[in-house]
Image 1: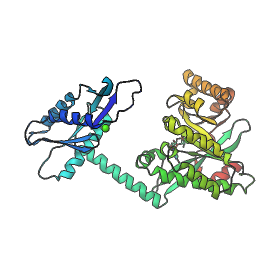
Image 2: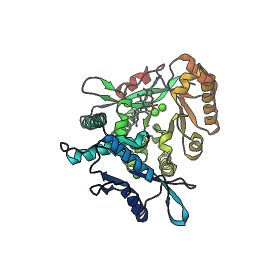
Image 3: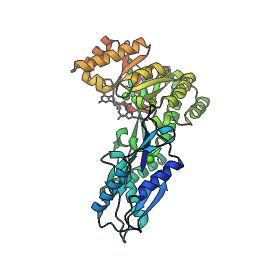
Image 4: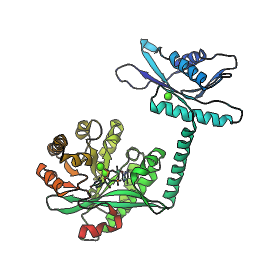
Length: 388
Ligand code: C2E
Ligand code: CA
Ligand code: CA
Ligand code: CA
């Protein structure tokens, strides 16, 4: 697989044109040894090379290194610009017992690792790669089934206002009630859900449940002002159906829109061009936007300036270190001051002791959540907590 990049100002990827493809093919052909060796374009900028008579994998490894050397020189394109290419290679031995489709799949798995581990760009297939591949496949299937069988459960963790010491709402956190009887935490399945796209139907279902809950609480004088915060996955935030789905929800459920809060991580905002109009539309709907895990991601200051946010959630790693470590305390203080300057609210995560509350209150933080107040409880029991 060829990854091309242009060494100029924007640093963006360069789209390979026909002229460059021809030159890539010419370079690859120089790597062949014997008349029976073949190079073929496989897919896009992926190529398959069959060496007819290499004795063993070490010999194949040498051939692969030779191929990478052939790409050390840049390609020249129009107006004298230079394109550099990084070549990643996956290797597998062809034997008479293994069908060619399997050989190709194995080489592809090795290529995938070569691209993602950055260990010199060459990987040889081995059975652990296949084991990982089949575990993934197995996990993915299990998640699909879980969605069909409605095994996901929503938990809610109270958010407490420091000034009046009362509950103002909840953050919704997902759990998977696995058929083996144990609850799985999001860390055990969300990555796969995100990668496979299952997070999308899962995310729509959560919004639906949250809206239904907010509507039901409207009839309850104790609960009618409670907010619900939903974590939006990066993929869900950028999904073309997000705004239409929300519109449809607003048509079907009645509740004040400022009671629905959306939590967005900094990572999801990396693609500022795409995120900006979406966030503006969400705010225009009247929803509240939280920036989640603040301080753990990238250029946070730009985001605060650029996006229409309401609340900063201070990551629990800072809160938990703040009592022991002066620098973490300084970070928390800075985030709170920053929020005040930008007229944003603050919610501190991971409050585990009364001392945390005292320190945060002194620093001017408005609200918090954490095991000190309550762990996440099943959403159906949220009202019991709020009223107790
Ligand atoms: P998060 O949004 O930062 O959620 C807070 C996490 O901190 C939750 O873990 C919560 O159980 C945990 N927590 C709460 N209080 C305390 C405390 O006092 N001490 C400690 N040590 N931890 C505390 P959880 O539920 O395992 O969620 C992990 C992450 O998974 C969440 O981090 C969020 O990024 C993601 N997530 C959870 N539910 C959903 C969901 O429904 N959709 C999406 N897209 N992401 C979700
Ligand atoms: Ca590529
Ligand atoms: Ca969150
Ligand atoms: Ca968080």
